[in-house]
Length: 192
Length: 153
Image 1 (cartoon, rainbow over the protein chains, first blue to last red):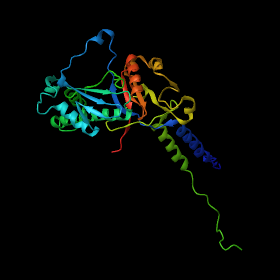
Image 2 (image 1 turned 30 degrees about the horizontal axis):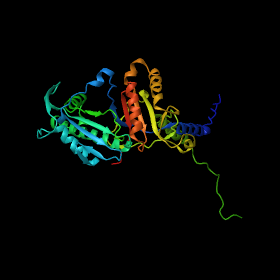
Image 3 (image 1 turned 90 degrees about the horizontal axis):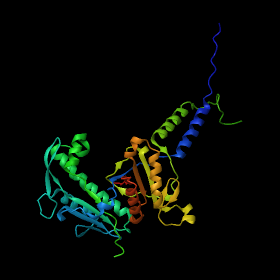
Image 4 (image 1 turned 180 degrees about the vertical axis):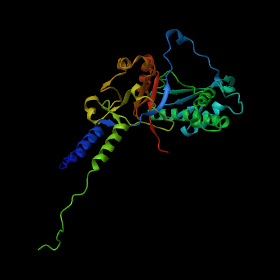
C-alpha cells in the first residue's frame, strides 16, 4: 500500500496572529511598579477622646516640621534633609543616656530577652502649602533612620542585616526598635 | 545579457521559528504586566524614595490619583490639583462612597487588608493630601501607601 503523505499544516499566519495578540497586550496593560512607603494612619478620634491629650514627656518627642517653603525643622533646629537621618538615629538610640533625649524602658521581648526600648516618638507636622515631594523626602529619611538602626541591631545580635534575618528575628528587631512616626492632626499654620 | 546571473533557484530564508519567538514575547508581557484599570486623567509624577516596599497584593489595593489634569482635560477642569477616583474627577466628599464601593467589591476576609495607594504628583501641595488622609481616617481605611518610585542611586 502506498504511503500517504500527510499534508503540511500552514503555519505562516501564526506569527501574525501572535503579533496581533502581542500588540493588543502592549496597548492595554501597564508595567508600572507598585511600590511606595507604607503607613498606618491613626484612627479618627471619637468625640470623648478628643479632649484628653495623651501626655508625652517632652524629652520623648521630636517634632519634625516642614513649612510651606519646604524648610525643615527638627527639634528646634533648622536642618537640611540630609542631616535629618543622623539626628533621628541619635534620637532613637540615645547612646550616651542624654537626659534631653528619649528615655529607654527595659522591656522583655519574646524570644530575645530584655532590651531597653526607646520611648521616642517622631511627630511629623506639615503645612498645607508643603510640597508632596518634600514631605515624601522627609518620610523617606525617617524610615531610613529607623531601618539603619534596625540593621545595626540585627548585625550586633544576629550577625546579619535586617533583610537577611528570618521572620522571628525581624519581629524581634521590630519590637526592639519600633517605628513610632505620628502624623499629627493637620493644623493650618498659614493663618497665623 | 546580464553580467550577474542568478544561479539556481531563489531560496526563501527559514522563518519557522519567528512565531515561537513572538509567542514567547507575548507570554512575557502577559505575565509581567497588568491590565490598565482606569485611564489616568491627571499628571502624576511620583516622588522619589529609597526605602520603598512593594505592594504585596495588588488585588487589595485601591488607587487615588492626585495631580493637575493632563493637557486634554485642562480646558474643561483647569489646572488646579484634583482628585481622580476610578475614571472621573471627584472631590474629597466622594471618597467615602468610593471606599465603601471598593470594600463591597472585596470578600469578607479581605476587607481588613484593604490598602489605599495614594498616587500623588510630586508638585501637589500637602493641603489636598491632608484632606484626603483625613477623609480616609474617617472611613477607617487606615492602611495607606504613598506611592513612590525608586530613586536612582
